[in-house]
Every structure is written in structure tokens, then in C-alpha cells.
Image (cartoon, rainbow, N blue to C red; front, side):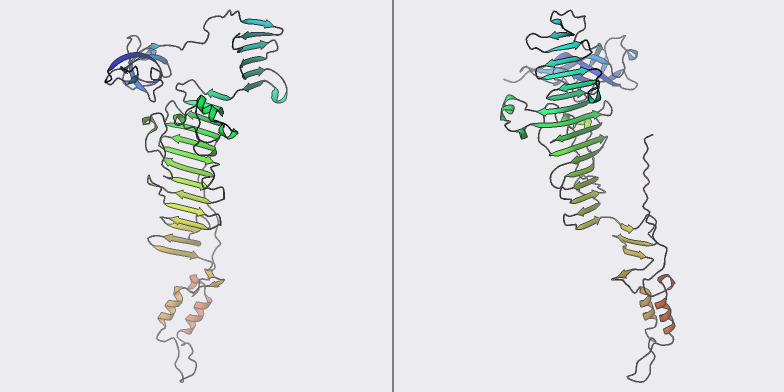
Length: 445
């Protein structure tokens, strides 16, 4: 039998994130609906005539009428296409206890007041000294005022998993978790037989604004980074075995730092371009393109690989620097390579490798091989100039001296420096400054 779908209006809980300029339309983040929290905002207008611009502002909690597509199988499929969404009005979530409590389960015991459930034994106690204890099974929170040393004004928490929501912005754009993952089902729990099967980690995720476009994620002592919705809060799986990871996503750029992965990526630092905006991805973060712009890897054996000047979406870069475990070094560059002692030493000492113009070596104080200066082109020019009159003709079989015409310039060329027309690379110039400039200025102001 074919499924039949009908539109069903439902009242949902939402929060206003912004107002569309010059319209009566608001951007609303839905965090409570028959289909759970929405991955992105919806657009709604107010339906109650007095509730215009002055009554609503960013951050307000509102009730929103949203029409869903409901199937004959008893499941909601999606929001119904072509229907409008309406804000019904402001509201506040119901508090835990909004009336004064006169509970018969509370009692006074010596120096404290106790509130306890007689079945679960979960409860709360407050002493005359200011000590407060909240307990439920194997978990408890102890608050103690005063005291000494590290126990002064103490908050002591014992639990398997600690979750802290930083802020009050459903669907919780800021979160912190430290704890142990013992399985997500009874079958999973039974399958864990050794200590290595229990994962313990500390992870944080926070957005810089209510928009998920810019965020920071950290994970310490765990297998997989917590990249927002990419890794559920109640589940941990083995991804990369890293000891520490930090991801900073800002618009289309993402910086990733990973440390502790065995092998070539023991330390991995890279800058990627996120080609698809975060807002368009449902329930997960956009995968970045590896080595798209910059990538540095250091292995646990000391092997180094550096890629930079990436301009494409594949594993391509304009520069590569590598050091093997034996100390062998390789440098590759698609552009010009310049080696100097400082930013202004090109005219004193430098080697420039240009893929278009060739190789230029500047050595004002001489260029030597095995300690011996080399002969330069000026000597060849001298030979060429006096090729027809280099030697003076005398008797057959006798030594032929250099012609008096060529001899003075030979002596002068041998005894002169390169800049004075000499024949070798010997020179006398000012020493290189050795200054390497860094124009970056950091300030905490």
C-alpha cells in the first residue's frame, strides 16, 4: 500500500536569531519540534497583529506554527513545501519548580535539612555549616564553604560523565564534556571486556556567534575530534588516534592542529579552504581539503614534511620541504628560490634559482671550491682578446714568453679583486648583515 502524506500544523519551540532587514520576517532557530532540532534556521512572520517589530528581538524564545508533511506510516517526513511559518508569540520554558514547595519528604537530621526520594534515595542535604550535598546513586556533588588550601570553598563532583552547556542557546552551540564512554547500548556494553575498550576524553565545542560558520573545537586524550554535530555528544568512535586536536573554523578557512597520531602525522598542522559553507551541510561539518594551502607533518621518528603555497583542491602545493629520519633534506619549489643571510643581503651573498632565468650566485667576498677561488669570465675575455698575440715568438724550441702587450693586463688581473676587473672570484666587500625581518606585530590590546 502506498504511503499517503498530509500537511499537519504543529507548534514548535524556537529562538529568534535575527530579523530580515526591511521586512516583517524573522530568522528563527527551531530546537523543539516533532522532528527534533532543525539543522538550520527557518523564516517566519508574526501572526498576532500587536506583535510587531517592537515586541520581538534577537534571542527571544517564541512559539512557531510550522506545517509538516505527515505520512500514513505515522512518521513526520519534513516541513511541508510551500507553507508559511508564523510566530504565535513569546514564551518562557516551564521551570522545574515554579511554586513554593511544601514536600513531606523533607526532614531535619541533626545539623542538616534533607530532601530525599524514598525509592531511588536520590536527594539533597544542606547543613548548618553551609555544606550542600546532591547525590543520585554513584554520583554526587559536594559544595563546602571555607576550608583550607586546595579544599577551600570546594566544589567536588563525582560522576562518570561531565557535561557543561556554556550558554543557553539551543541546540547548544557551546558545550564541554569530560568523561568515559561505556557503550551506547546494552549489547555494546557487554562487548567491552578490557580497559582498552573504554574511551575517556575531554572535548569542547563553541561557536563565536549564533551562526555555525565560525567555531572552535578541541579534543584531548581521545580518538576523534568533536567537530560540532560531526560527532554526537553521547557517542565516541575511533577516528585518528590523537592525544590533542584543535580545529578553528572561520568562514571558508579552517586551521587544524593534531598531536599524537603514530607515524608520519605525529604532529600535523594544516590550513585548509572549506569549499562548501557550513550552513548548507546537514548534521555534520564540512570536510576540509587536505594540504589545500598549508600542511606541516612531523613524525614520531623526527621525519618532517612541509607543504605550502597550495592553490588547488587536490594534494598540490607550490613548495615542499622534507627531512628524512637519516637527515637527508630535500627542497622543492615551483617558483624562485633565494638563499641569503638576511633580507637585504642579495647584493652581498646570495644564491637565486629562477625557473625562467637560471641560477645566479653573488659572493662579494669570493666564491671558493675546496678553499681555492674560481676563475671568472673576465679571464676568458682576456684570453680571447689576446688570442692572436698572447705569446712572443723567439727561436724554435725556446720558451715563448707572454707578449709585452698582454703581460701587464695579466698581472693586473691576477692581483686585482673581482670588482676591479680581476680574474678570480676573490673580493673584498662588507659582511652580510644576517638580519631576517619579521613584520608581524602582536599585541594584547
